[in-house]
Image 1 (tube, one colour):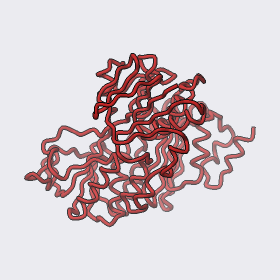
Image 2 (cartoon, helix red, strand yellow):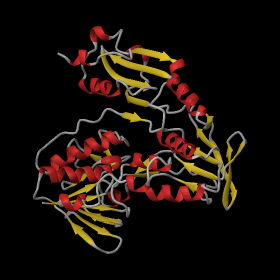
Image 3 (tube, helix red, strand yellow):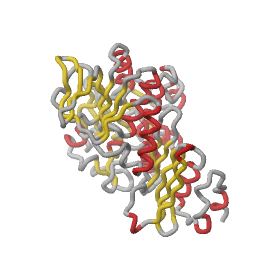
Image 4 (cartoon, helix red, strand yellow):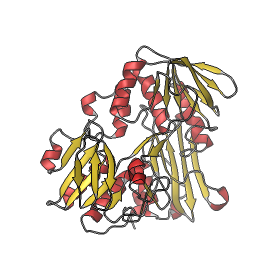
Length: 404
């Protein structure tokens, strides 16, 4: 069986690697548009911050694909696909026919339609080449504005700050940082910690124009205020890359629509990762991309496995700051029970969201201790019963819950 995977990011690489583990005879070909071998995207933040050298970005040894007998072809952009055969045509005129085709093409940055967005000095951070270009540019333009106070925007801002760039500001249109991952208390604590590290914030503010004469020199807000900027980094979210799928006639919503087996509307074409829409959801998160890739590999190898979804889990990758958000963290209070522990003097905040004595969401701020156990607890669906009044203590022994 010949399996062609478009995309050498997390979902494409893990899918191909898992197929090889399950089927030693399958012909596995991974085609990447980037010229670089697979790297975990979080490693880009460490590289941007100066915490790791370039060679440490990559996940595997240089010869891993050869040893795994997986073909990896880099620097090839797919321009069309025929889902009947299925066949993929590439920009250089070459073709690949497959027994099973996997779309793991990921997402691209969303660029807001702001006047001046085309000026020199506007960047996104999605690929290694993006980071290399940004680092070359910012060395001589110290005033940096990041548009977006989500996970990526905060990670980029702190990474540049950690590298030694002192004038870094973040603009967030919502009333708090990480509105999907945090509540008011957690967001306030996070903002205070990041300000203490040297970042500046404009919360509840919306940019209306990027100023400059060819090259960016500032941001104008809707209220008319102007902030100087020699570099603007857009971190306003991502959107699935749907051009290939739509032109091929695959069913698409916000992403490529897949069933519980990660199959698209055409029998021999599958999708996983940031490009896939499952039960109306596009996760855009590493745990979901990993789960989908592994599940899909089993289905490709004739071992049917249903993808039931992934409980959202986010970890902020900021040096010296620990934050994990899992599941439902901002529910309607009438239907849920909320447990909290707040120690501002220690910089620690914990929150559990309970539904009928079962933990369905958590915020863990300022400490790593217990994050893996809480994630396991949410996944298991076990009730916490008699431990409700002590579970948030720093020295709580989670094994007591899992003993029976």
